[in-house]
Image (cartoon, rainbow, N blue to C red; front, side):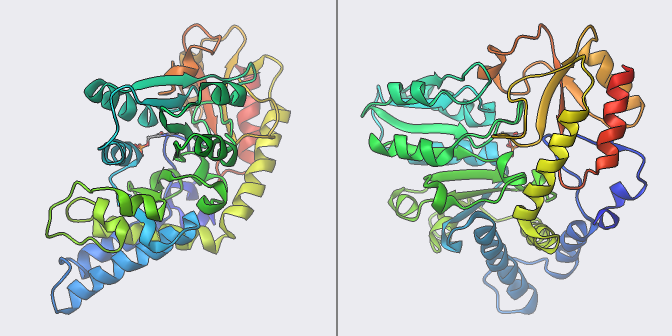
Length: 379
Ligand SMILES: Cc1ncc(COP(=O)(O)O)c(C=O)c1O
């Protein structure tokens, strides 16, 4: 499949930065360009280009539904995860009361925390962190202890963009529902690495972003059908209200990106789908962990159990920023950062300044992993 990506054909630069954004197969770019050439129109007209746009919209919705495991009615497209989270959190909370509580997890990316913090500032809600354990898993007892009938939502990542830990979303949904709260999931990292079935997870809202799984820059959400039906949308009144997900897609959709999204799903399915991808990445991740030099400290889980292949690490006695620069110069795409947008987690991480993130995805190869581990050992 690497031959389907112009950026991977040269086989020189090793991209280990998928958690920041993945490489994109040429067919996705081709679908975007083809749409601009052959379907530049708006919906609602009675001629060919307009019909093509309507086809693109309907197909993208079907593809999104298959990817998420839901009905195509309940898919909402938007600019990106952060934008969808800001928009949907405001929509969901229109009738909430001052003093209502929102729980977020210390594993969360700020794209899933800031929307609640800003909402709380406007409306007098309270936002609290749910803690992590020593090995950087979610502390489910702490979550259970914080729940009461004033909690409106439990928001969490499905897997951390910094340390890779997977959260048991089905368990969080169950706990949240016991007190009538919503389970609101940021799956930007998770959906790039694991098969998704929102109905089995039992969550109420689930948001992800296609540029993390070889697609264009477009976000995608699932909302539980009766919940979407119950919300009053912020929308231009003449704009479509059916299917229900459309109510929350404000303004004209990015038709060309939706065509690119469909090409992305077709690409993922053509290489075996997310189950095959997850199994392969699991092996790759274990190979990486097994081959690390002794001087490497990986924060959080030490095996592939309960995590995706996203790793945060430091090398003893080596400055992370300088190391990342040298690795980049040698042809390895990684970088160093202080908090990786995970502000709640940062308070629990022991390093003084920054750490290197290494993120594996299905287009990485065992040979790339071995070469990278050898480069770490040299450092
Ligand atoms: C876990 C997680 N949540 C949210 C985001 C923000 O996503 P977006 O860029 O689609 O707004 C990211 C981006 O890296 C992320 O990794």
